[in-house]
Image (cartoon, rainbow, N blue to C red):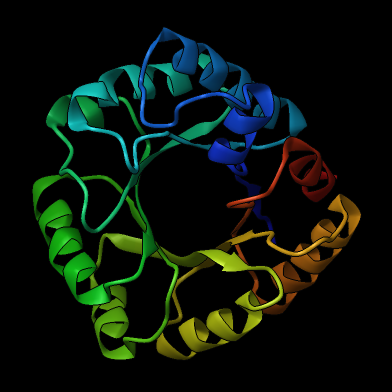
Amino acid sequence: MTHFISDGATGTMLRCLDPNIDLTVYDRHRLDLLGKIHRAYIDAGANFITTDTIAAPLCHWHDLIDAARTAADGKASLMLSMHESGDFPLPEHIEKVDILLLESIIDAKAALKKIERLAETYNKPIYVSFASTNDTAAIAEICKIEKVNTIGLNCIDISEIHKGLKKIRELTTKPMFAQPSVTTDITPHQFAYAMKILQKQYRLILIGGCCGTTPEMIRLLAE
């Protein structure tokens, strides 16, 4: 089965490039670093790039999306990252991206309302990624929304993500993806090996990383 490769942890890489960076400040310095990070993941083999908008104030989304678009330069699809408790995108944001990504979902009921609104407002594919699978009833309702065409998990440690993927597979036949975190001391090769096993087991159409993952891990996934 053909699958795609997404990027890894933007926050992790921002701190690697500048240990003193204030992650609440959205200035030119941050945009320059983001450009380098997006390009590093694309050079590593990622063909899906995530905008750094999930926790950003809406007034900064335009610049953050443009930073990702410029870095992608037609080589990668762009996912607009959002959270169930965050801002709602404007039409000018939607025009510049390929996929609407609601990720790191903890409150599935709140996410359901936002996804329904996104589906009613915009004609773009919606990817939905959970950081908790506790509310299976709300997750099942989300899976039924037509424009939600891919369901996944992120921000769950790679040692625990199998259980969540199994639960999601029991709720839907839609394509799945996984972007686990790395909170334990594993090597890039161990990460890539574990992810490739999960990709085959669950026929994942997109694999990548979340907190703690690096371009080297993504490079090994893409090999």
